[in-house]
Image (cartoon, rainbow, N blue to C red; front, side):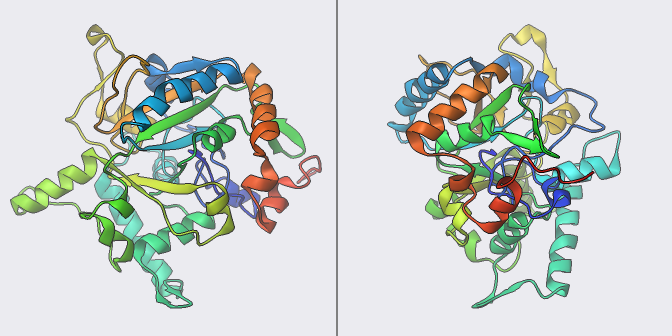
Length: 355
């Protein structure tokens, strides 16, 4: 999801909230249509994508490239989406984009305010308390994500094969297969030195009772405030939560998060400088994180700063890849969604859910 989703939403309306992958622990590839978008996110990723038309090809890309980089200490978060044309958006960002139908995509100031409103409502509802006391902000967001509420978290997995499973996952709508004719997409996001749990600078974020990331800083704010706010909007972070839910453990799940991207930096339209650069509004319609797409080159050492790589999975290969993942590794709906909400969503897919 998708690096990989943990969401098996209990209701159809909740399913529509999820993005794909690790989100509310549903499926990384839940519906994330580009309603109202002014550009096709597929065009943003296509110039940099690797392509796979079989299980063997995607396996070779994963093992031939990422095994080498991982052996050098690099860490990747994976997200699979069943439709390659979908943007890489958090559920909160996507729903803000849909709800405002604005000429300009939302910025971090807008996202930060709405996130604060949601957390205030969580407090009013008394949902900020757990069995052992008050929940940290990250724990609150993880629970909201799990149950389908919009958050800035994007679901991922730290297992590339589970990410691949989400990219080719078989889905249904009202008893009929869906997305089988759409190419899937697998993202590999470099989160080296950006895993909150293993970084001394950010580890305390897990326990903070107030949002630990920088709030919007005015132009006349102290230099340190403006610097940290800029860093928040130009980098992405990963979080591997405690296995508070069976699905998190089954999916080896986590989240990526960060501020809405700004310019500079710049986002090239392709590897050819003559093709120009995307405008920041176009970037935001393709991704709500400051991630730079890079070409997947097996001979290169890889880029270490905010890099994201992507593989397009051809639609015709989805069934074959699913069979390999199920027969060799045991990945299927019952093992990825090992709970009652998972069964409610995927246990009887042939039965219609509406007239």
